[in-house]
Length: 367
Image (cartoon, rainbow, N blue to C red; front, side, top):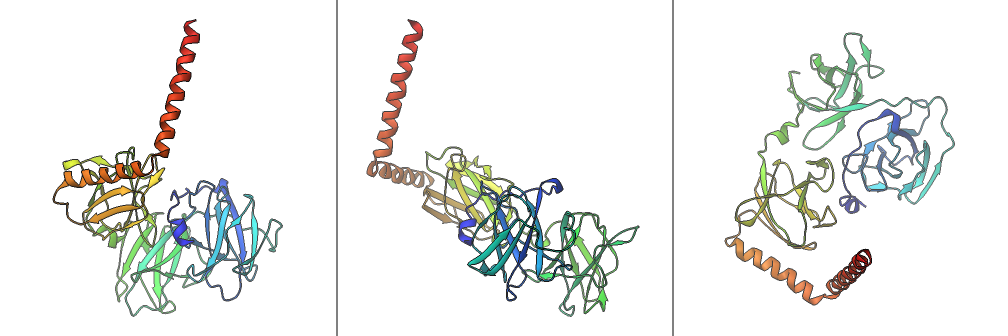
């Protein structure tokens, strides 16, 4: 499944409390940190990257977890253990749902309420990332609204932060939060109060608790932009570039098929993108034709020669003879056409019919 989702348009839905559906899930005991992956009929994803968003435990209903998703994302997969185990695709009707998972291949969906008490209200949240010193064990986040003092979590030291890649931890907080403390060792060590805006933020903490923060991922900010050079087949109209970071799924562009490639030197089409990108797709015809996922090295300019949807060559230096490359690409395309002439014959026949019909219409109008 993971390979399949990589080809989907990766539009992420904006938060809107009026267009949300709550999904409750009940999973086997060995399914740790259950997540939900969701998408709509057009393949637009609700979340940035597989395995989706982690569901929140319902303290009033033991064993049940819940998550809010856009009402239009009626296709869902429940997964756990960092996405290593999952259900089959479940197609919902856009209403609140209770999904009981007894095994990966045994799932029951109900639209009748199976939990006690009121359904929790939807709260828009943002993510706080933290990187702490090695001596800080099991980091937690404490968050509140100043000056009124409304706390996001029930008790100190707050919520445990989830371990990510490259030594980072993360935790989500409501958008009304404007103050945080990163702490660890069961609250034994901590930062000072940190005032922040309601936006995704990265906090780095040293052994003494001194903290710095940024609203841009520091690791990605340090890598300079790169230029992607492309030669695409002549029959790929308005070639575009789609680019992202795998496996976290951070996209450069907001909607598929990405942004148009621009005219460069020596016949190359070009696009400047962030240096942290490690995956691209070249596409054309409004995304109707595309390459597979192309894995690239970060921080390096790249030259991609696309012969067709299945064939391309990647280089980190410009090929010595660009004209020869272009001629070879078009020769390959012509050979493909000559070995499979049927589609082109059909196009020619259709064109003749259209012209004939048009001529008849014009004749009738003149008459």
